Amino acid sequence: MDRRSLIKKISLTTLSPLFYSGNSVAQEKISRIIVGFPPGGGTDVAARLLAEKMRTSYPSGLIVENRPGAAARLAVDYVKNAPPDGSTMLFTTDFAMTIYPHSFRKLSYDPIKDFAPVAACAKTSLAFSVGPSVPESVKTIADFIAWSKANPTQAAYASTSAGATPHFTGLMFSKSAGISLLHVPYKGGAPALQDLMGGQIASSFNPVGEVIPQLKSGKIRVLATTGASRSKFLATTPTFVESGFKDVVAEVWLGVVMPSNTPTSVIQKTASSINEALKTPELVEAYSKFGMETMVSSPESFSALIRNDLAMWGPIIKASGFTAED
Image 1 (cartoon, rainbow, N blue to C red):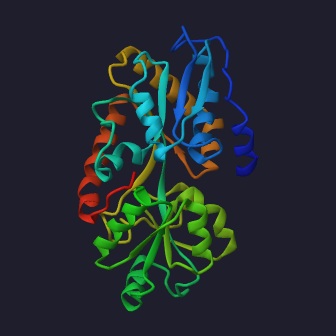
Image 2 (spheres, rainbow, N blue to C red; image 1 turned 135 degrees about the vertical axis):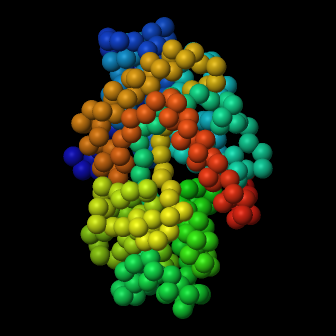
Image 3 (tube, rainbow, N blue to C red; image 1 turned 90 degrees about the vertical axis):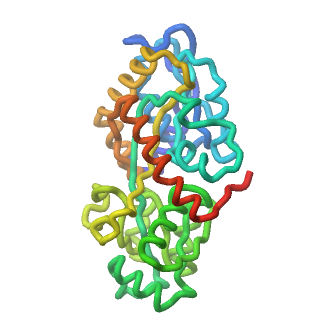
């Protein structure tokens, strides 16, 4: 099954309760996975894939419920105020927990105080790509830096949106390289890549999964990825660390949190159910179609990941002077 067919199939599933027997996490009422984005998007599909594999742990039913709005903040706030009984969980992107607290002047939630981390589910690095407006002789990060210095009016990068992880990763790179790259935000990865391939912008930071389908066109070249190690989906592409930039490390992740004060026993059982699902070959393969690697974690290790990323992004966002608009 190709990526497009998978999205269509999963978008039509887990919209209604799933009733099965088995080891129960929450037995008394239907449980919900809240997603802060519309149906059919990458985050939504990832949540539905996970829910499908977790169904045996929820004999009373498990549904995926979309609550889009305010760049996912409505969903975050909804789960914050939900009963802390394990029946409501948030399937969240990294930036809602680690970037928004630094970029919004006023935020209705605190990612540390208001939520109990359950499990990290998947991760991907970002790909830094160049398009046809950059000469074919530019094959490495060092080449791109030299080209940017020689062509300052063309030195720009696209991101999937203002205030998200790709935006600030570009600032991180620009500062480390000592070059001035103009940031151009787009409304999603598809339009950013369209302009990249059309030569309207020189470079772009995108999740790996967005870039892979475009490589066949031959119109873009990935110069580096942002993970601590190479992406298994772009195994021949070096990381920024390998390219001499040890501080340019960033990964996009998806994970599950619950309202604070949720009983530890419920959190542990839910984490166990999630981890068992993430170990299945079917889910590993399905996530790989989106350039995502499944993760197996504990509530404690996921908490450490959130705290570390929250601390990492703080000085970068502050130095940028960026403030998100409500």
